[in-house]
Length: 306
Image (cartoon, rainbow, N blue to C red; front, side):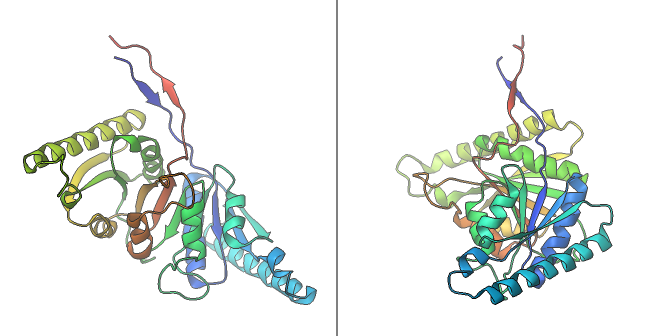
């Protein structure tokens, strides 16, 4: 039988955006913990947007903005060092607007962390906000820090998968669980309403579709165990009439919820589907979105088996 074996993905450095808001400060401390458990560095980024502001703002104001940005970075770095004195922390005052500044800072292997509320104090991510813009456009994984900071750890990472094609980014979720010494739960949400009304789908076929989903989840779990044999990996299929609602409920019982972020049908424009959009608004824990094009590990051919 011809097969392939996947290498363990390497979790990259962590980049976090700070803007002076309480949410960003919380995200910075969470990102510091994430970088520490990965054994990677933390980069604090404040995007002052001075290049664009220079078109209508005088030099004195621009200088004041830069000084305020440097002071904010220093305060945040000091707060991080109080909790993680050995963590390597770098500071970057970007002249770009926030989305572009964070994307550039992350490069092609980093992970971007953002808070769930902007400096304006929105009760949730709003269309056009930095967090939403980064989540939709970044070519690297993005973690939106949500939930109660004091909530006890559950010791689990949850991966919300759609099917067999999700194996690539699923290994990244496994790496997150491994770094936490946590269990990985693979969840497939089977929404029966998505099949109702299709000409090609008869009512008698629904059980068969459900069995197929269970088989795919089991196969994904087995492939993950091949790469992480010491990792506790569970899998199950959740049934319901609302995929976002089911996953939001699941987020209350896990430390991190990871899911893939698809492409637009024609490959243009930012891609953030309704499920991802609902989660970064309402999840009870941090949510990690992994772009479909992000390949954390290259497959290595396995020898022919008898």
